Image (cartoon, rainbow, N blue to C red; front, side, top):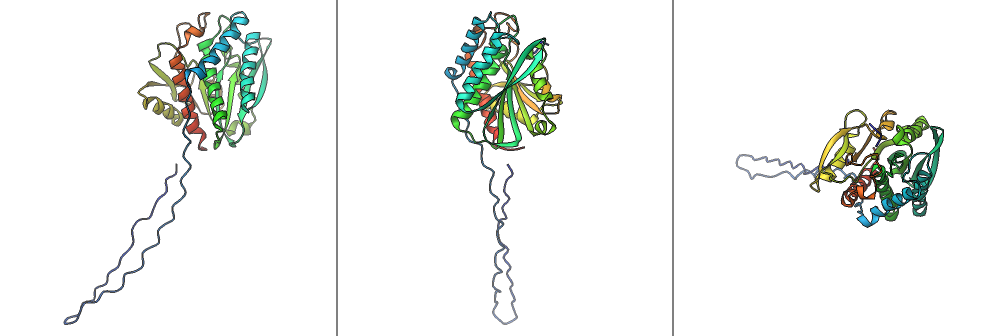
Length: 314
C-alpha cells in the first residue's frame, strides 16, 4: 500500500367471452368461447455465471513462499529498480505464460531506474468490455513486502491461474496486471493508465485492486464501495460474498492504492484490503506476517466475484 439479468415477462391466461342470450319462454343458448389470446414468446434468459472454483492454502501460499525466497536472495527486498523486483516479475510471468496468457512487460522510468508493469490477457471475451484485475508487486526498500503486497499479487495470480485451469469463457475480456513502484507513489499504474488511448481507456468497464489481502488478526474486509470513483455494484458483490459466509466488511472509498490511478481517469474501481498489518513497510513484513487462512479466504472472494463480473457485459 502506498504510504499514506434482464428477466422475461410472460403473458398469462386467456380471454373467455360468454354470451348468454336467454329469451322468455325459450332455452338459453351459449355463444361459443372466443379463442384464447396467443401467449407472448418467452425471451431467452441470460446465461448464468458458471460456478466459481475455489483454492486451498496449498495453491496460494507457495506463491508467497517464492516471493520470500526472491527477497532473501536479493538483500531482503523486492523494491522498484532492484534485482528482487525484476525476479518477482519473472516469477509471475513464467506462471502466466505456462498457463496460456498473453503477457507483456510495459516499461516506465522512475528515479533514474527502469520499472516494469506486467500485463496478462486471457484470450476471448469482448475487447470493448474489459474487466481488469490488479495488484502492486513491489515492496519498500526496507523489507520483502510479503503482505504488502505479495499477498495481493499472489491472490491475483492464483485467480488468473484458476481462470486458465477452468478454461473460463467470459463475456468480458479478462486482463490481469501487476504494478511496479506503487510504494513510490502509484507510479506504475499511473504510467499504464496515462499511456492508454481514449478507446483503450473507454474499454475498461471496471478495475479491481487488491492490496494487503492476508493481514493477521483480520476481523473485517475493507471493501471499496463508497464515494467518487467506486463501483457500487462490484462493491456489493464483494460484500455479499463475505456476508454469505458470515464475514464482516466495512465500506471504504477509493484511495491509498492503485485504485487512485484509475479513478483519476474516470475508470470505476472496487476491490478490498484486510487492512494495515503491524509490520507494514518493515523488514518483519515477511512470510510469517501473512495469515494463510485469511489469504485463502481473500483469494476465494476474488475468484468468486471475478467469475460473477466476467459473465456479463455492463
